[in-house]
Image 1 (cartoon, helix red, strand yellow):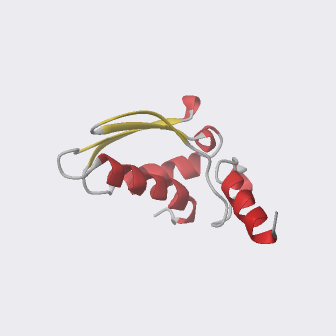
Image 2 (cartoon, one colour; image 1 turned 30 degrees about the vertical axis):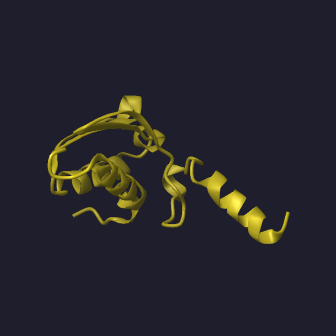
Length: 112
């Protein structure tokens, strides 16, 4: 195996590695999984929600300010977040991709 292949394999494996709440940097990936998805509603499990209330607040604010999102419910005890959105105005795949991006970028957002 050459170095390039090894680096690609290592990059893939770090995408699902949980990050410690206090040691997160913009280059670290936030661990998540999609628990359930139907048109207009998606539930993510994000382990970081249980131990990082600042992250949970930032993520919720970002989601609530997103057009097409109609409701956001965070449950830190179960490490889950449910997002309802207008399925008739955005495709499920586009919304899923956007939500994953927000999950990853929320730690970098300043709280106002």
